[in-house]
Length: 454
Image (cartoon, rainbow, N blue to C red; front, top):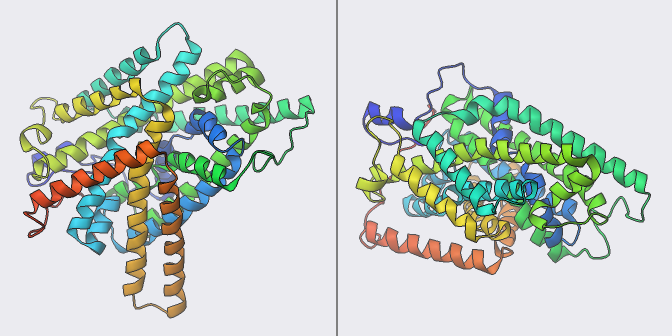
């Protein structure tokens, strides 16, 4: 977890306060799955189906492959460095402080925009359920409630993880079963292989869908934030990263496969809430309501965690002097929470009222794919420097190289607005770094991040 430097009081504000036994691999996997929010596949299905020309299952398979290769790089680095700073810490150790700073800077995109995307997803489905209420009202309500929870410091997401996962799993199982039953009963000409390849499919379309689908995997790297609380982190963290990625890849592919089989014969009113229309058709109002509940409640818990993480990242950067200390480094004297940062992330989230799900997820994917690519490069460099056997060494270099190529390919297949916005953000970060280091003549301040004992 992200924590500010120096005093014990400061550390208490942002460190994990878990007093229970060390987390073992199953607990770490459950954390990763909960953070990734399995129901997100229902939220993004319509967008991915349109982008992939009805081949969303293939898009998820490609995204799973890409994320699994990158997950192996994270596993390698987490085994070598038992640090909870994820990409920032790994890149800083392997490629140097300046590159590490820029990796952290790019990740700010994820932290700032993730709550916005979660609120946009929830609002899309709530609007479908309650068409008389404007979407912007739901976005504002979510932003206010989640921000209030974080100001009071309630760890609602942690408390509800098991309940939410059970509920969401049941909803997904019912959705898949009823969709398959609907397809079988209709006896249509829709081929069982059409979700993977059909007459409208193309490699470019599937790749474009995979670029969006990869958003669903964001969070597997968050497992590294529990390094300090994990039992035997050198082994449990890497295992949990790989298991979580494989598990979620299978879930996303199966759900999108079942949805795609009946999507072509379903009237879709809005691609952002396509799963709602499919659920209404195959399971009536009850399943449609269950889908909305799974997305909203699960998204609520995820948004709490995402906003808490973003506000504490900004707090750490403020206290280290990377950002304006008086604003970003401020902690409320009573609540002991970074209220100004929480308010800022809440305001950023309100921009969802002017954005679509496609564009907002693309912004997040720019930061994620850039960070993933640099982590893959770190894995290549680390393997090159190693003194292991030649065959094993070159095998690691090959896997990380392929992962780098795939994540770069996905990065450049994002829409033009995301590339322009992300590149501009990176340029701003580079200029800011130049000023901060007086023309790169000194090292940038290092963010204080909890480290597990090596």
